[in-house]
Amino acid sequence: MAQKKVYLIRHGVTIGNTEKRYIGVRNNQPLCEQGIKEAEELRSRIPASFYKQIKKVYCGPMIRARETARILFDDRELNVIDEFTETDFGYFEGKNYNDLNGDPVYQEWINSNGEDPIPGAEKREDLIERSLTGLMKALGDMTEDECIAIVCHCGNIMGLLSHLTGENYFHFMTKNLDCWFMDLETDGKNIVATTYDRVDLRNFA
Image 1 (cartoon, one colour):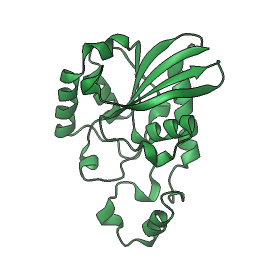
Image 2 (cartoon, one colour; image 1 turned 60 degrees about the horizontal axis):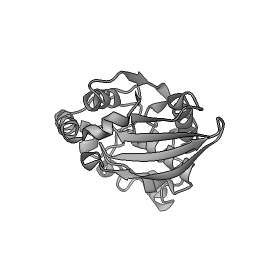
Image 3 (cartoon, one colour; image 1 turned 180 degrees about the vertical axis):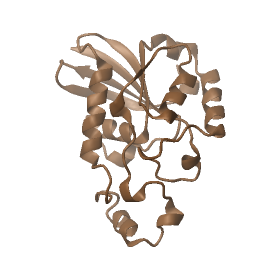
């Protein structure tokens, strides 16, 4: 059974993130000035021991993911996987709390603890399914032990980790540039997360 270590890193900050908006697949925003600065600062502080173990780097196709990956892994080949795009937030897309406060549709969703589907949005199960498809592409040869990094979106991270660990979806809310790792075991068909946790890339041991 092959052993795979995967680092999932959320992209840096965009203007929509600073305004706390639902920025999904319909808003292909680049990193803002703050996002570029923070990614560059993180890159300068990540120990060489982290990079030494990474065999391959993958990222989603959206600008903010590709820009972040290029800054953090400036000397590596980037492999773009289309399935690692952000979710479609439907009715919430581009809006923030100030826009949605008092909206009965939004309040109904809040009352469901975020479990009800958002009108016009991608279904959570579809997000998880395509994120898993992307992960399988990134894992590649299922008989080979390796360590990879994936720069993607909060939705991908929440979907993958909740599915592979059985934890609540919202347990895996991830801030910009934060990282999770997973130790995976696979028999070529099934994948099991044997270990997972947040990791501080700045103080990587």
